[in-house]
Image 1 (cartoon, one colour):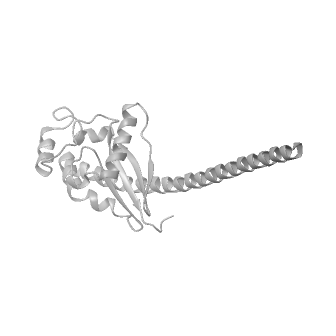
Image 2: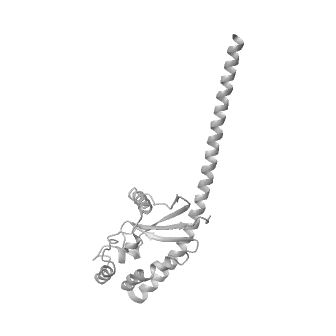
Amino acid sequence: MRKHTLYLQWTTAILVMLMMLAGCSKNNKSSDNQGKQDIHDSVYVKKGDQIVMLTFDTLRSSLQHAISTSNFDGAISFCNESAFPITTTYADTFTINRTALRVRNPDNQPDSLELAVLIEMGNQVQAAQPPRAKVVRSGNKVHYFKPILLQAMCLNCHGVPGQDIHDNTLARIQNLYPSDRAVNFLEGDLRGAWHITFRPQEK
């Protein structure tokens, strides 16, 4: 009887150890996979940052030229006619768009994924936290989002009418964008977000 009892005790102890080892192995595997996922996401963040910087530099340079030659009224026309083609200049292995909760161009209205990310970024701003770039995976696509914070120069077209936006500029905006909602921003506000969608083969 005593031998039988000892046998059961040893068997139970061995089973418990095996279960603990299996659990540790599973947790380690999960941690390894999470680490790989984090590294993978960081690659997309780096690529996304580079793409946004290149696109934004091109857009800003062209916009400044439009302002210097035609004032802010000309800048409104530039954004209406030329801003979108510039954002697709580098779109050979990805697509790049801009979106916002309060859009000027109705073509930039957010879809469900963009809306969720914009709300999250807006909550970060309200909590006095810098909004962060974000990678979202959906099916075989990878989406990169980067917040757009309003700069001082942008107040001339997106600030407070009658205070930051001159009457003639406001009239031009209302003529080109009858449903415009992209005014009454303050410097540092969340203006919107860049959205880059990488094609499946992009790593």
